[in-house]
Length: 262
Image 1: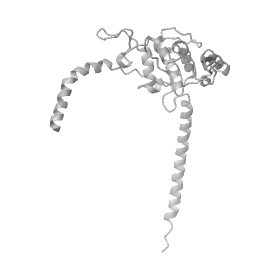
Image 2: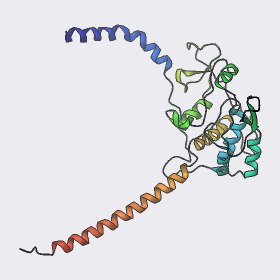
Image 3: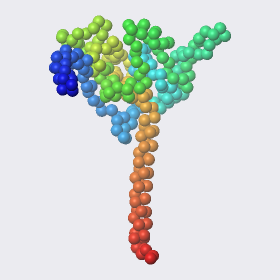
Image 4: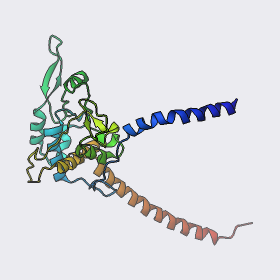
């Protein structure tokens, strides 16, 4: 019985493999190129000037469709913004407020203590505005995808002309770094789309790296603090281990020299 079963499975794989192989190749995505991120590694840190540029790119190019539901406005103080500037940034957006006397929903101005305002009131409105596609929230995008920040940067710089033999669907764009190699989002960045205050040239590659760094920070605003604490703890534990080892050697040296009483 077992022999017949294994024979059947072997024949099935032999017959069906040619049909599934093209499909597998069709949905396979290319590994994105690696960038030299300053925040990688145990001693990695975020560059404040890059984070400010990245926030500008997100605000002017990405926030139209993508939200940051898990990030509060007051966290922007870590980027060098003052509280007055943060109040002004938050005040540009409306968020759901308490119900009025008739039970109808209201809108109020966001405050620094509020999370970033969503660009759409609900998922249905988001789909209706994007031909049925739901723009994902970017709060944890660099943590939720394989290859992390490199994946997001790869998507932003990866728009290309589809190969002649590639079956690109209507309304889709070819991107080798996206799953299935076709994406519903149009190319979000073009050269000189924003004007950086520090004079940095706003190329697609520069803006892609800047906004990716900002979103990596947005996913872990306390990353540098946790790393610094971790390094201090490891130094303390290393010193404590050496101290305990020396104490143990000294204690056992005394014990070994004592003759047992009979």
